[in-house]
Amino acid sequence: MLEAISDGLVSVLTFQSLLFMTIGTLYGLLIGFLPGLGGIVAMALLLPFAFGYEPAAILSLLLGAHIGTIWGGTVTAILFKVPGSGKNLASVFDGYPMAQKGEATRALSASAVASLMGGIIGAIFLAISIPFVRPIIFALGPSEYLMMALWGLTIIASFSDGSVVKGLIAACFGILFAFVGMDPVTATPRYTFGLDALLDGFHFPVAMIGMFAIPEMLKLFVQQTPISSSGAVEKRGMVWQGVKDVFIHWGLLIRASALGVWIGVLPGIGANVGGIAAYAQAVQTSKHPEEFGKGSIEGVIAPDATLGANEGGGLLPTLAFGIPGGEAMAILLVAFVSIGIVPGPQMLTTQLDLVFSLVWIIILANVIVTIFGLLVAPYLSKLTKLDPNLVIPSVLIICFVAAYATDSRMDDVAIAGFFGILGYFMEKYKYSRATFVIGMVLATMIERNLHLSLTLYGEWFLFTRPITTIMFILIVATTAWPFYKKWRNGRTAATPATR
Image 1 (cartoon, rainbow, N blue to C red):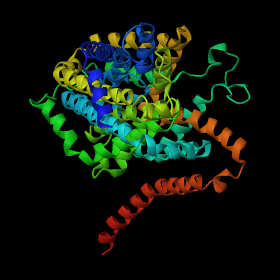
Image 2: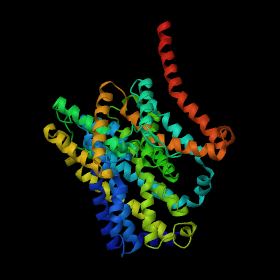
Image 3: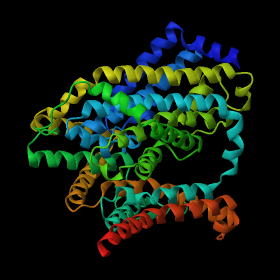
Image 4: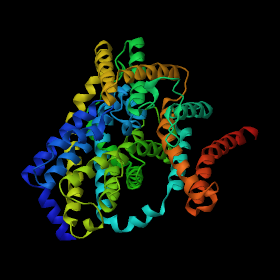
C-alpha cells in the first residue's frame, strides 16, 4: 500500500504532469466563469487532445480542468448571482447576499478553502474505502434512490423564506416544467403544445441562467446601483477571515464533506443535488438558521465542501465497478478506455498506483485552485462595485451566449428569456426561485426511479424493501421536525405570557 502511494505521487510530480495539471485547472477556472458550461464541457473539449502522453499527465489535465470549474462556477454565483453550472446553484443563496454587503472577498476565500478541504477529505475516502463500499452500492436499488429524491423535496421548508405554502407551490411548478418534453417510458410528448422546440424539454442550465441571472440584471437596471451597496466597505484581512471561517466551522465542513462523498458514491445522483442537500443540511444543523439567505458564511462553506468531496466519491464507482458516478465521470471513463485503462476490481490490485495517482491529482489540483483563488479574490470582489450600466449588458450577453451554446439552438435563448421574466415576477411576489429549481432537479430522478421501482418490485415496494421502508420513515421524521420545532418554540414563547 505504501509503495503504491509513493509511486502514485512520483508519477504526478513529473514536470509534464504538473504542467498539464496547471494548464487544466486554469482552463477549468475560465470555463467555470461561463454560465451553463461546467466540468462536463471542459473535459469533453480537452478529450481530443488527451492522447500520446503519459496516463498520469492525461488524467492530470482532465481532472484538473474538472476541479477548476467547481470554484470558477462559484465565483460568478457569488459575484453576480449567476451559477457557472447547476452544481454551483446553492452558492448563490448566501454568497450573493455577502457580496451585496461588501464581503465578496471573504465569501470567495471561504469557498476556495472549503472546496480544498472537501477535496482532501474526498480523496482520502477514495484511498481507503473502495473495498468496504461495494456491498453498500449494490444493496441500493431504484426504490432507495426514489426515497433520496423524495427526501430532497423535504428540504423545501429551508428555502421557503417564511412561507412554506409558497415554497411548495414553486416546487410543484418546477416539477411540472421538468415534465415538459418526451415521456421517458412511453415516448409520448407532454405539455409541448405542438412546438418542436419543447420536445426535448427545458434544458436545466438554460432554465437556471434565466431564473437567476436575468431577474438580477433587471433588478440592477431598475435600482441603478452597484451589486455591492454604496455603504458597504470591504474590510482589510477578509481573505484570511474567509480562511479562518472554514476552520471555525469545522463540524459543518466534515458533515458537508461526508455528504458530498456519499452522494458522489451513488451513481446517477450528481453534484446538482449534492450542493442543495448540503445547504439544507447546514440550515437544519446551524445554531443560527435565521441568518441563512441573508449572507451566512455557513451557507457558502457547506455546498463548496460538498462539491469538493464529491469528486473523490464519484471516482469510487467509476474506478472500482466501471459505473460513472456522474456525467463528468462518464467523460473520464471514456478517457480511461482510450488510454488502455479498464476500470474494475483489478484496479485495486494490479493498478493500485494509478488509483493513488488520481488521489494525488485531486489533492494537488485543489491546492492550485485554492492558491489562485486566495490570490485573486480581492481583485474579483471589485467587480461588485462596477457601474450597473457596464455590468448588465456584459452579464446578459454572456448568459444568452451560454444559453445558445448548451445545444446551439436559438430556441434556448428565447427559453432563457422566458424563465428570466418568470423568475423576476417570482422574486417580486416572494415565490422562492430556489424551490422551483429544486423541483426541476429532482423531478426526473423521481419519475425515473418510480417507474423502475414499480416495474421491478411491484406497487407495494415501499413496504417490501426494508431499506426503503427505513428511509421512508426518516423522510417523514425529517419533514415533521421543522413544524414540530416551530410549534414547540411558539408554545415556549407563549407560556411566559400566560403567567
